Length: 331
Length: 294
Image 1 (cartoon, one colour):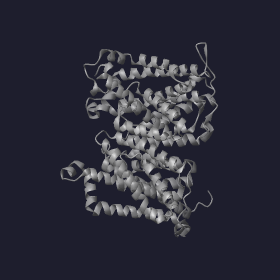
Image 2 (spheres, chains in turn red, orange):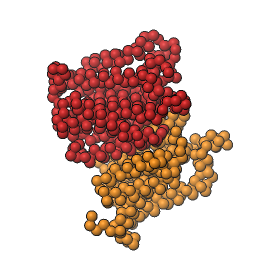
Image 3 (cartoon, one colour):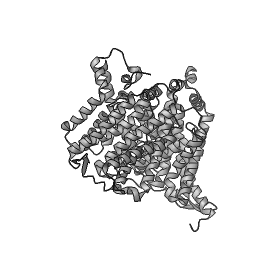
């Protein structure tokens, strides 16, 4: 078993003579990431965009746990993100639950959906996995689409109005963009702590062992199938949380959240940022959303640019922006 | 459900076969490309859509449908050749996920280029005059065009089978699927074989798009849902198996069509239920080789 501090990057690529400040930064990755996220809205022109980056970054982070660290490519994460959003919304709209309980419901929804999809998809391996998760998430899309009484169907789930957030007697105005940003950021930081803890645990080492050499991990006595399923479910928890926050942020859950293009978003953001890196998903989400916003000022055909940038990334920068940067610094 | 006769079920079965024929053509291209190149082509739906649009374009130029049947696969297949040569080839040997991710990005680019060229709204696509109307097939009247789609898919399959089984190039393709290394050692340029196979696969996808155009109209997003359905077919049939693609394609078409007759509210979900059952009982699909995907 490797030391905890070594496993945030691919095992094979960890040289011994690393700059000590780099090692220090790695040990305090949660602190540094949190500090950055807290200062982030100060440099952003629109706080609403910053909130989007936070939420999609969290979504991509959940995806990255599976793809970057375990090496399983899922094209069905929209189902996890969407279930989190819908269940959070349903809890508020249909059951009148308070916001914090609704978030818990959303996370549990993501977990349950991940367990259901995972049990089926884990039975296949390699390239099948992407196809099966994509197909199953499309199935979930149709199910939510048809449950009009609960989800609003094509119109989306409306009326998730959370105006005020109170924690331990303190009341926060959730309408104010900056306050909203920091409320969401608090949850994202909790998720970062949780992720860092997972990655630093023995289980985190097993995850990366499975990615690097499945046969060897199996021969060492690890249950590869169970590892995959657990990682998928954990990924569902992160994506469910992201979905729940998205529902609170938008006040509506559009049916497009379940669309397979939303699954594609996680793939694109994760790869753009740098898969298998701790902070990469946020970099990817920021670059993707900024690109989308900037290019769409100029042309409605922003998907052309996003697709092209993604292809260039696959061809020439498979480590992504953050991953390439880390590699440069490391040398 | 008054009037639910055996004849009606029979007609619905035929409708399912016509739909299945389109699935078969898509899945066979996917399977062929995967069997040779171990590339899952996420742009397959985009090439399908491109086939329909090239058809629209050629018809607007004054071509007729029969000419399109020949020209569309050749034009889109040529685009496929360029894509394989310049975009996918650099990625061989870099892990199975990279070509998949690349074609995923490519599908965005193709769809958006089509939106720029043809607009976001769709086009109607008239059934060719000669194939309009319905014929009596013994159990009732059935649209002639749907029969034509089934027949056309049959002809393509026969042609593909003859090409693979009866030509020397087909022999090389089959050998390349089994063991590319040995084929390379024997002095065959495997890269060229892969190039041709990718072109054939995308060409067949384009033909499927053209054949489906009169049935469902033409919109830039038409490749999305059908790609997912083609994946279901491939998973059910077994990746890399051509026979599996044919049988599973027809089965999925029939399941869609019959479930929309009996349980319309479940029609969209039925094929995923089918896939889930297959995954639970036989994860490698009907004709898939166990261990191929590991």
